[in-house]
Image 1 (cartoon, rainbow, N blue to C red):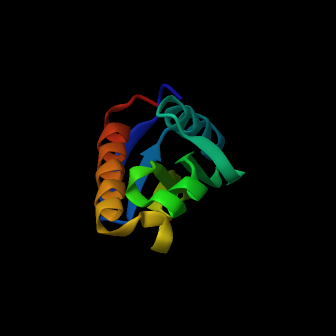
Image 2: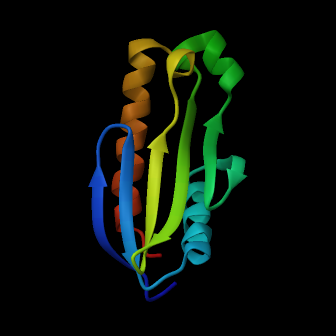
Length: 122
């Protein structure tokens, strides 16, 4: 994927969209999977092109709230208009968040990932 270039991005608190040229969905999915694995995440459901990466225990998060680390982010990678789109979505809600402190921690982690993904070379 050495020719991949980030050409556009949009983000908010729940979702970030990155648009690349010079790559294909499978190559981008491999690079994104490697990125998440390096950050301690595992593909918990779906495929690398449309799945959910998670870190930590959902059971412990439900019992202990924000004291137990738990993060889950959905990934969608798809071609459109000759470019490849990457969407990363914060899929955690309700009891998974662990109250206000947990919600803030999830937002900090999502912000950290969004910044880091912009700086890596695919």
